[in-house]
Length: 432
Image (tube, rainbow, N blue to C red; front, side):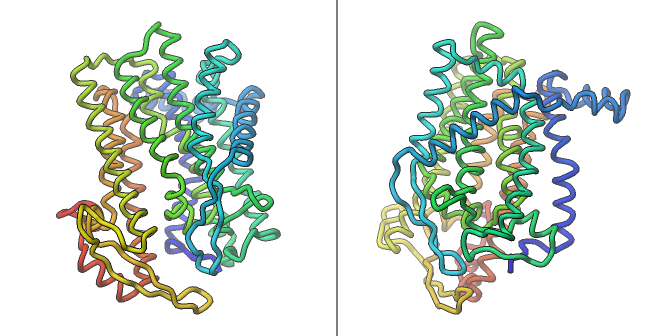
């Protein structure tokens, strides 16, 4: 049986919201950033004057060039995922006792992708400006194409699941929305969630960040320091992600959330559009910050990204050494928690209660939200829309922290209660 992550009513409301509100929001965000000077008010006035017909008029049709760009990019990333060399990495043991095996070649794929993309531009083979100029059509194609892909995942989960970590809740809406399979694969080696989450979604973030830089350069003849700060911080964060990709495979996204509409549509559509939106805004709004302010923002952003990385590194090293390591120069404080798998087998986990993880149970979300603020703040405060990603990320991570706590409470029982007594704050030390 698929585990219901939220109550049925919450699932229905969130799915209907995702289906009905998110696709038009992606289009409206693109339109506002690119054609309405970043002004929500200007877009609202247009819609008030022109109604539904006006909205349908600004929704781009998925063109053949948009489909070709997506197809080439997806095929290229899939090939890199399959054929680039990489270290063999084992994921965490699943609820049914399976242990997925991955090939950790994400950082190499990331370098090859950016070098190839910049090389195509430098040698005049392909101009990334084409991607920007057809961005609305690409987002439109992704909206529809990703929906079809999620239908494929739903059918596959019913007729050809890749492992015993799959099953139906008995409710078609919940199965489609939250997913049927934990670790869906095509063949033995092509992991679908690694592709959607990492190689398509996160990689597209980097590709589009570079695209926005090149578009601004070709439009104005130079790149504003605000765009350089924004792009540098985003690329540092994405580089950190691919350095740590094997650690990401232990997180809730991969090890607990099934491959359904919620996570796959989000990675295939929401990440390329919403996560990149501060840079999308800056293309047509070059802000000159000056050297001093640029450096302040850059240093603050890199510090936040480093703390976020160090939180994950600290916990990963703790798990890898089975607690036999130093945390901030001292032996770690921990709780040994036992739990039962779905097959009835008893296993143990170590819960870290010192270092960053002694400050709050999800402290790593604090520097992540702050980092997003610092790569958005070069846009300054003339318009609200560039900050939508920061707002969305905050809501997403607070919800994820609650879901993770609920799951751990169910899994560890009394040990989780003891853990919460030792680390009482969920995210913000002293506040929440």
